[in-house]
Amino acid sequence: MTRRQEIIEILRNEAWSLQDLAVILRIHIKNIFEDIPHIEKTVRPKEKLVITPAQCLKCNFTFKERRKIKTPSRCPKCKGTHIKEPVFQIQKI
Ligand SMILES: [Zn+2]
Image 1: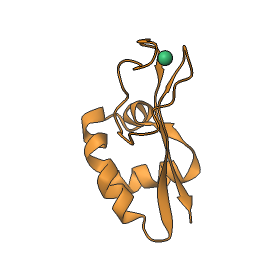
Image 2: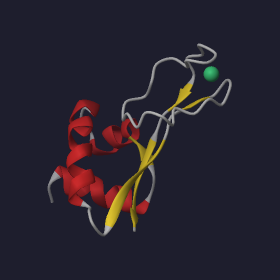
Image 3: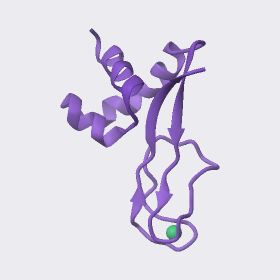
């Protein structure tokens, strides 16, 4: 199984942040950032990659407008730096 297939299998079962995936697979998060756009294409059309956006833990601001895969470092609303990471899951359409 390739790394990307492995990630797909993991995300089919449960939602994870990319940081968690990096720990599980023992690879650098940078590699997962590269894999995500490929994975998004691979699972189509029967499935889709669902991203639960990052959220500020202080004011609950949700980073909805940008579907960036990297965790933002700072909240634009309250300038807080405690940001909950976005989580990823593969779901059937
Ligand atoms: Zn905030």
